[in-house]
Amino acid sequence: MASTRFVILGVAAAALVGGGGLVVTRMDSEAKPVTPQNAASVRLAAAAPTPSVIPTPAGPSAAELAAVDRAKRVKQLDAALKKLAGATPDFSVAVLDRRTGQSYYYRGKVKFDTASIVKVQILTCMLLKAQDAGRRPTSAEMALARPMIRLSDNNATTSLYNRLGGRTAVGKCNKRLGLTGTVMNSRWGLTRTTAADQVRLLSELADTRGPLSASSRKTAFTLMNTVDKAQDWGVPAVARKGEIFTVKNGWDTRSADGGLWAVNTIGRITTKNGAVDVSVAVLSHNNRTMTAGVTLVERIAKLTRTHLRY
Image 1 (cartoon, rainbow, N blue to C red):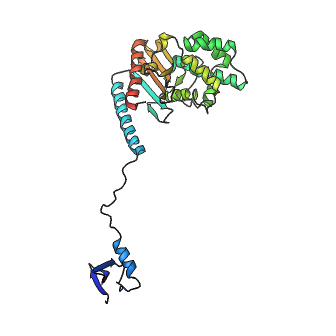
Image 2 (cartoon, one colour):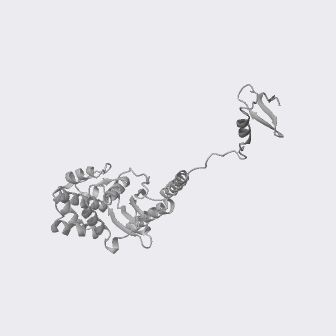
Image 3 (cartoon, rainbow, N blue to C red):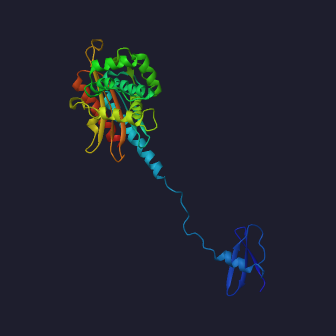
């Protein structure tokens, strides 16, 4: 039987009547007759299934959804802290999650007086000095470091600070640690720092790739994990059952500030299985009382945990 040509909506199609049926195949250009030589391929092309559903673009990935959720929670935390700031003394906060690599800063680069949290910097620089000399800290150095961290002993701090070389030596050490916003003072408690620098320092105390050796990291952890019970406020207030905390707090009042209080807390919250590994720093000043300052920094730390869900 001879082949017949059809034109459908301006597109040529070839048809073959044979074997009891009609086979139509779409052509890209002018239709070509169906011949015995190409009939089989025409039938195969016509028999190919036509998709019944048009594929839709893939939805957002899990990472994209997580990023959207994170942005939402950060926005909520920003709003909560701004609201709190309208009714409280000046403060800043920084959070660094070593597990995810995510960080959060609220006024993180604003400078505040350190008060006694500078003692962690002094401890770290003491440990590095011992490392550089190829030795462990001496018994005399540890006799000063223990009360400096556990009891926040000022006399021990002054002695150790001077043994290290004071403002100049600790300032150079800070650069080695990447503390770009910290300015040392010969009166160590008046050193100026930022929340961002403090979480950087805390991270260096745990970083296996950082400048501190395993022995030095263990020493710092042990001291900051065993502070006197009366001084374990601040960051530990957000630790949950089974979690481990380290902490160093600072508090000071000066006549130059009208008797108002600077109250700071820095520390880490971790778990043995690594599910939580977070550094937190909250700095504040112009608190009417020390108690009010403690309440404020703990409230801020709790807000970060509520919204960031670490």
